[in-house]
Amino acid sequence: MRILQLAILLNCCAAALLSISCANQVALTGGPRDEVPPALDTAESSKNYSLHFTKQDIELVFDEFIDLRDANSQIVISPPLEYPPRISSRLKKVKIEFNEKEELKEEATYVINFGKSIGDFTERNELLNFTFVFSTGAYIDSLSLSGQVVDAFTMEPKEDAVVLLYTEDMDSIIFKERPFYFARTDESGMYRINNLRSDTFKIVTLEDLNLNYLYDPVSEQIGFLDSLIVLRDTLTRGVNLEMFKEGKSAIYKSYDAQAQGLLRIDFDRIPDVGQLIYPDSAEIFVEQPEGTEYLNLWYAPRSSRSIGFQISEEEGLDTIQARVNTRTVDTLAGRISVREFNFDAAIGLHPADTLKLEFDRPVRSVSQDLIFAIDTLTRDTIYFDLDTTEFPGLLIRLAHTWELKSEYVLQFLPGAIIDYFNIPNDTIVREFKIADFEDFGQIQLQLEDFEDMQYVFQLQRDDKRMREVIVNPFVEDEITFEQLVPGNYSIVVIKDEIANGKWDPGDYFSKRQSERRYTLTLEELRANWVLERSVTPNDLNREMTSPRALHETSDER
Image (cartoon, rainbow, N blue to C red; front, side, top):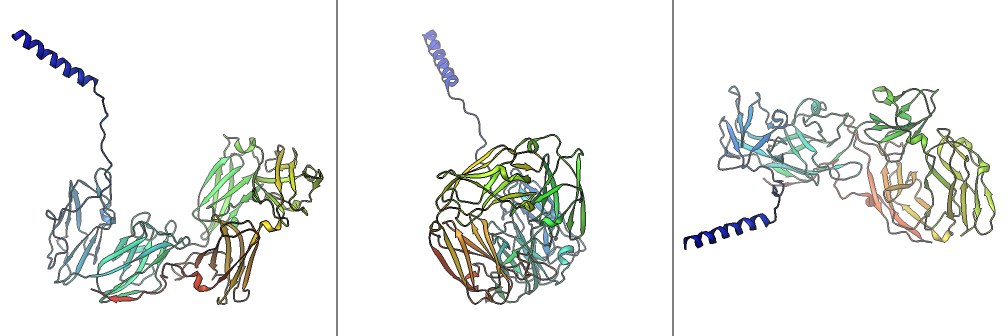
């Protein structure tokens, strides 16, 4: 009997082991990533928003292990203390110890803003804009300020910008002192500063890339309010700010030797071709791709391993000695090709237009007898007269009196183009057709009630600038854009206060805000149609209230 029981037991154990070995083996996972910042444990911490506070150590305990970084630069205490406190952290706790010589002001509300200093230990989820507040008197200051920060050019919200309040109205204070109060913007560009005292403040917003609450004009954007903010027993709402990068000329950042014959010169903003200065003896062609923050510097083949040039900036000339790319032969080995045509592939070229070809590298010279087009119906061959003064350049313009709805085969025979590196082209063949006048539309703008000053009107499609007109609407009350492919267009309007034909950012010391830039969305343009639109200054009003004037206040305490 015992032998039978033992056998049954052994069989059960074997079956159990077999089932374990046959089970699917699944790798252990750590679960979902922690994205929640630390939270204050109010039961274990010093009491926030306490009244009749006397000088004592402040202990803040959180619900998980924390990582305290850059405490001396990130944590701002207002009103400012005469002696820096000792701030330390261990495990889940942050401790603030006042200097023994420190004397807190009577009947004052103190706000300790921790900025971005606190994050959890594992994932560094930051506890943004956390404040600890106490009052040495019988009440806590309850005034507050809120609003939005946007980019002055795009009008897009600026996330993680810092909004600063100062009690002194000195222009230089943003370079020397940390603010009296501050807050950071959220993903919508919104900010709110609470527990403000009744006072007069200067308000500034900074990009603050180096997290020191001081303005670095070389790398950071800035925004400001023209007037001081007077806070009394009211709550000021909606003080909005526009942020911009100062400077009349772009600042050189770096260069990239992309291939033999080509350097890309990077700037901190859209540069001007005139900023690039090079020796007269050098064979150089400079290209400014529209809307980019760099210049392409094309240079002829050379034996030297470097090329020198200068960048013109506000402070003077910056001399650069760039090491050229001698390891790759991508640019020299390839053949020149067409980058873009000026006609719509589906509709064709406008009958009154010139055929334009933009190439992927500069053209040094052309042979006119090797460039022609063949009419596919009549088999006639068309030759073109070219303006050779445009070379070196990226564009070739082919003018002709086109026949409506005709079709052509354009040919560039080998050697028709000699590129900037003295390399002839391979055969280039392109088919194109001529549209009818009725295939296109036009846009007419009627300008009404504008003041006597200059404006820039830019026609855009798919965020690409198509045409541009500079006018004084007080003098010229109509703008017409003709020969337009049907589709959706918008109009960018720049209030050109400086009258230089472009948008200009603001200037902090001159107290000049950025020029106004508006976008008008138009109805869809149809073929053989005139889209008429009246435009008044009221049409240009933005959804965001102007930050250039103080907003109304409402009694609230």
